[in-house]
Each structure stands twice: as C-alpha cells, then as structure tokens.
Length: 137
Image 1: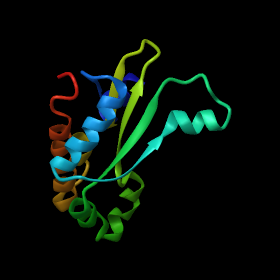
Image 2: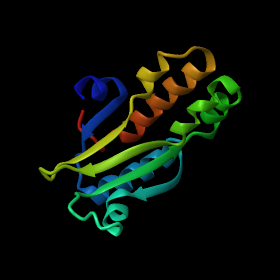
Image 3: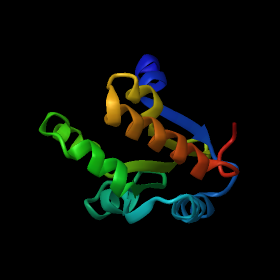
Image 4: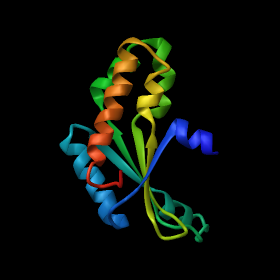
C-alpha cells in the first residue's frame, strides 16, 4: 500500500476541522478556476445502507473543462474519462485527524506526452494551489 500511496496519491493532514476543510477546498478550488459540480457524502451513503461504524468522509469533485476537453478530444485518451472530474477526498481518521487525499496528477503526467501531459501537470499544480493554506506542507 505504501508504494501505491506515494505514487498514485497525495495525502495531507488538514489544518482545520472537517466541515471547514470541505468548505475551504470548495471555495478555494473555485477561486483558482476549477468548476465544482458536486460533492458526494460517502459516510452518509454508507450509513443509509446500514453501515454505520465509519468516520466522516466526503469527496469533492473538481472539473477543469479546458484540460478535460484537451484530453478527451482524442479517442486514445478517452478511457481517462474514468478520472474526470477529479476527486478530492476529505476524511476523518480513526484517530480523529482530518486528511485530504487526491490523485498525484503531476506524477501521472509523466506517463503521457503532449497536451495530455500538460493538462495533467497544469491541473495538478492548480489543485495544489487550491489546497494552499488548508493542508499541512
């Protein structure tokens, strides 16, 4: 799991409580140019199905229409739609810490070339800008 976590994901501790973190990420993402089409309440969904022993967890979805469009223009890259829009997960650990996880778009960009590489690299940098002041460095 450690290799997967460091290669595929970025995980950071929040400087704020759960609800404040969710709100700040949404507001900051919009401020730096992301669309925020929705949020999915994971904990609530699981509780509604009878699985109630879970800490808080929410996914906030971020969309960059221009970057996504640049990727989706080519049939070769259309399978990447499974990652769109990209999710930022805010969750409470069993130790009551608030963490923020997201795909490591910058690292993922290294697997591609051209406009796809640029879209992932730029999207990753913009996502990290949106998290400034919210997560610990």
